Length: 173
Image (cartoon, rainbow, N blue to C red):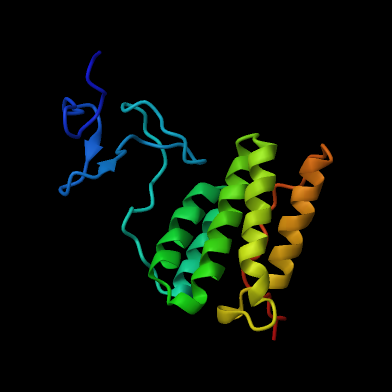
């Protein structure tokens, strides 16, 4: 019986994996616009720093910019940083937003089953915030979008790839 691969007791060091100074596995390979790893020599798109934590309004603005640019995986990365740093009473909302972005990532990657699952999960995390959403997040519209898109996917339809607005659109004044 041979030793298992990867670091740990009785395991040879994994010299091919990128690691941070604390030894945690990190993937430094370039990624495409949907977050898929590319060969090391490829250019890839600019990545979101793994430790990025933005203030809530900045996070929403940056995530919206990334969604509008067709980069839902990267929007998820931005939202995930805010989710993990959010106060307990907001954490589920941020997790729901991140799950919606992952659902859109799966949709763009051509995985309708994964997309529907994650869109529904995101809607479930968001729904409790519908009555009093922080930061003007348009919870009702996002939940409706996620559920409708998941239903369309389940029915075999091809839903719109348009990113939903994360916050309420205020009338021009």
